[in-house]
Image (cartoon, rainbow, N blue to C red; front, side, top):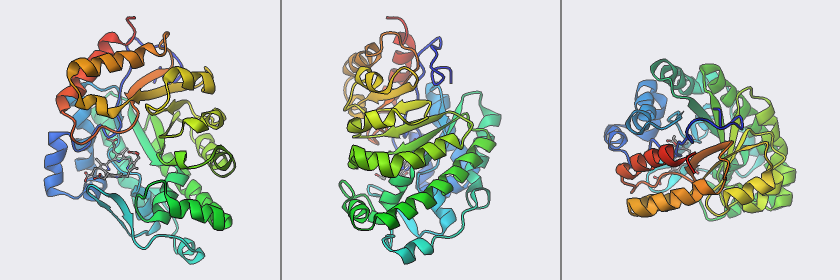
Length: 333
Ligand code: CP3
């Protein structure tokens, strides 16, 4: 929390995306008996998944166990999450009729279990807890495309052909996201991460005109600090500098020092170790982690993380080694 405010805590903080995922034995055994959405909907199971990496590795923040698709349950969208594929929306939303069919959203009534997981975590642990949501654009990518397709061609075609419809959809998702994140804030989330995983498919001009205003509205509607995450989006960093986010999370395709140069000193930075480095030897992993730590010589306003999620084939031992390494070497350089 101190790093997110731009300060320099006693040790460099670290948490990981997908830190409660399939590389963990506890989570894998949970998944043998329950579907991922069943875990999300059951605060006691979701709490167990959220706590596992926090207690096991001494990570500096928990992230509530859920998925970016969760708020769609409250809009009456028919979707599933297929192992190895990701979210599937069938049929996809590509027409005005489809948009009109989205139901009224009541965050507490339809997704209150996410808040309840956060509340239970707060009672059980002193570690900060992150709430999260997808950005409207990234959620729209899954809604319009129906599933992950390289560079989301149906979404981009909709923007070109029917910008009006695409814009209405983004507006609708913006208000859903505000209600959904406010609910997590009320439940006790210390900070909130906005996952804009697919923002990088947009040009800087599209991003500035179609996406930035909604993101700004979301961030301004919240009282807690927001971390904005995206991937393959280094070309958008000058636009991201305009976001009122407390922190920006970057992937491994751009260096922390370059990002800081483009974003200025007012925003905290998060990232950006390549997740494949955790598939290497401990020695290689530690060398690469040190390179990341050395990118920002003063180490202020910085949260160590990966550039994207922990890969399922990662050895949990490497995660433990990484957390210990960052805590030992973060500020002593
Ligand atoms: O530990 C955490 O980070 C918290 C939980 C979390 C999950 N999904 C659980 C999950 C978070 C923060 C997410 C966000 C999410 N989900 C994003 C944004 C971040 C990113 O990675 O880009 C996206 C794009 C999704 C959509 C999604 N859900 C994908 C692409 C997948 C993977 C499908 C697969 O099997 O390859 C999921 C499923 C999912 N969400 C899993 C987990 C732990 C794994 C699948 C399972 O348990 O069956």
